[in-house]
Image (cartoon, rainbow, N blue to C red; front, top):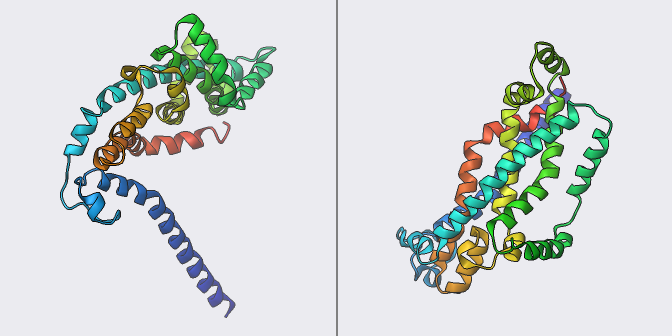
Length: 283
């Protein structure tokens, strides 16, 4: 009897878990599906039909209007020009610094690591005014370099922390053997350590990509020229330009900002899962 009760409890437990997972999936997927459906609705459908109704026709003109009239093409290009250089510097500097801290043991390595960890806890709001003053004095205000430098500075602490954990999973004996065979420290880093951390690099790059691509506060503070705005600040300008009458192009512009993130995550999902677990076990 007790064994039968155990099977019944296990069945209902698994059944309940499936229901909860289904609810979570609906909560996560429905807003995206609703956004994509709204982005191809005609102008009159928002007033005549319920918000949850399917589009009567696929009105792709909304995307054309968002890209051309709403200037989203320029905003999209600016985000790319800011995001990928910042990511390149964050990954290179973060990986090399973490390698130096974890594998090149020296007297102040622990102290330097603590300083970088302290950088994670610095609130963004505290540094906006000092950075604005500095960029204004050196002539970097209203340039893409003001954003790139800021993203690198704020992205490095977390990147170094994550890479340090990943480097712990690389056996020291492997690096020592390479040094004994005559490899320089640069060869060890680029030819031995870095290839072993490709999944970790993809994971860290994606985490920082979300931070940079979705940033609003720095882009609003340091960029005033409409031709230099990134896609997030461009969304605000786009909404203000069209108001509440042109919901179709507005939803289309939001979709243009969201779709790249979705595709990148879906394409790199497996590498992200491997990267998240690669630094969990040492050895």
